[in-house]
Image 1 (cartoon, rainbow, N blue to C red):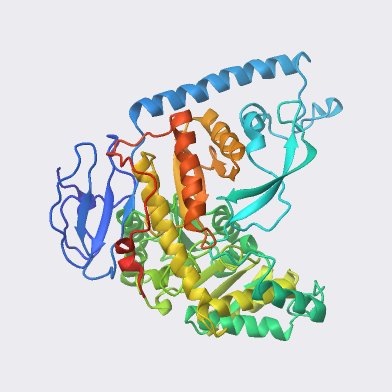
Image 2: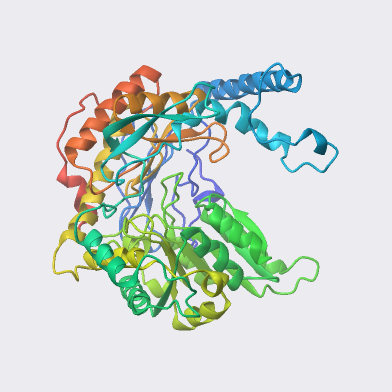
Length: 568
């Protein structure tokens, strides 16, 4: 291997053979990044697998940091591009038939009498929906008729016009293994202390508050919840909102504006992107989790200042996520904080998927790396995943929260959070903190970590290409070809397992995938059953693209040795 500029670390030291970017060179090989306190001994790797061992960034990492992103095999990439090309050709052919009324089109389009108006629906933007997404639409939007626990009940639906419309057959599919919900800690349930507390709150306060927090919609439980959130995160103050998406999109404009610079990771969630655009700030995008790319933008911002005038930026805000929901990767937070301090920027951390799901105490990515919460200027998260509720929060210094209470559109104009939802959050958070008098919360956090490591390890041993960090409960399994998105979801559902398929434009065009979400509610028997079916469907659809050496055994017990790093 040769040394490149990408091997230089944030503190100026050098570590040979490390490429500080998630995606390796396009050679079909895999790179795993290990961050440890000491330099690891050299290992002998499989000829078709490359493993990179790196020293820590001057002690920034207190635990191994392991992520793998195996490159798309060249032949698979070629066939994937060909698949999209063929679909596009047939799409234009079908549009030609629809134009001449030979084939019926049911999608939204302009009325005939409005053909000379400026179009309300952009025809080109709808091309993908009409001709590709519509063919596999039955893989999504399936109606549930139970709680989204480890297993769920689905209402069967059928179509007679190639997914343009659906009708319900009246049949319920019982005990479908749920590998798609964000129920990381298993609190989304209709029994237990959370459900009981939510029912009691409904009887006392009702379902809705019918006012904003600044008028007469501020309940005593709102105040208690915000104090609990601040205590949970280890910060001075916090405020909550009724919608997770709006927590980002409505608060970023209150924190940044004209004359400010936002440095955004290229894979940030749509809510972060929307909030940055609404703010009116200048936006520059750095490569995903690539610290060299981020530092280059920071240096340019300091040296050159604002365009044309070259005045210094009023504010530089770095926006990242804890866990990236499509890649399964974890932000390199120690390095981001080091850069933020060096260049005196501000850090906005979105912990929607990581809060509750990472760290020995379930405090998120800050807890995962053992960092000081005060080093993060703006901590954001949602209650929709690990807490089984709804809404989001912003946490940080008291001055920040007091400013947002009067300047955030979501705080001023939005209706207060519903009392039963609020009670679900309070009860589940106290459970994680151990304030309910039990160890159930800690056990769930640990069980989620065990399930995650086990599930990822078994999928790799089967020969699938898996993306992301070893501690991330979001597990993307690569499918690549568009036809296999629908085929995989349908075959899995036939075998009573519900999964989520993801494709373009939510992912790069050649990187379609199935996204599994692991939960603490999954038992080993449930995971082994799901793994057995995934293995069977993987053989059927030829999804085992990995060039790594495969491990033939399927049924194996939990290996306690792999959990030593996650012990508290």
